[in-house]
Image (cartoon, rainbow over all chains, first blue to last red; front, side, top):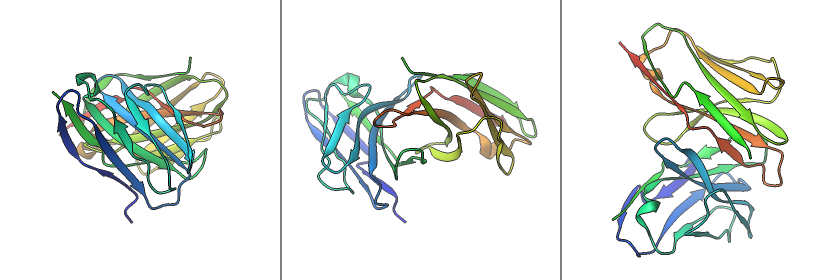
Length: 112
Length: 112
């Protein structure tokens, strides 16, 4: 049972570089989300999707893009990395509303 | 604005102690409240609460919701060093996307 798989686990970027964080789930869940976790800030929602082809912004979307071309995959793109994007990123999926969310193992991103 | 507040921010106890963690919320159109345990990596699901006054229990952990006073508690009895973690509270609102709003967490440290 793979659940939610995130890659990479660690990444160091230089300011201005772009990259994509990958997220895949094998549970046929409709709902997928990206969060960032910073010390003292809890988990904050970046972008989310309620199904293939449907995405929307969360609480802190600036500097990030997402797409959802399949039910399984929900990549997060950093367009031009900034030091303020240094964080731990979690992808999560849920079957529907009113169900638990399953989290990936996280990506620790450092922007220098 | 939707808000989830957890207290205390951190807590240090000795093995065998009983602890109570608190989560209060202000969310428009509340649907459910979820508790997660986060050790080094991904948050793992503990409980989902939707109805007031009904205790959910799993081993030494239990939780209850008060929808009138807008809070939940998570109790851990006979604590063990393996209970050391950050405990996260999340609230789901009945919005179009039913996203989860997280508190900042309570860091519990259990000393042998």
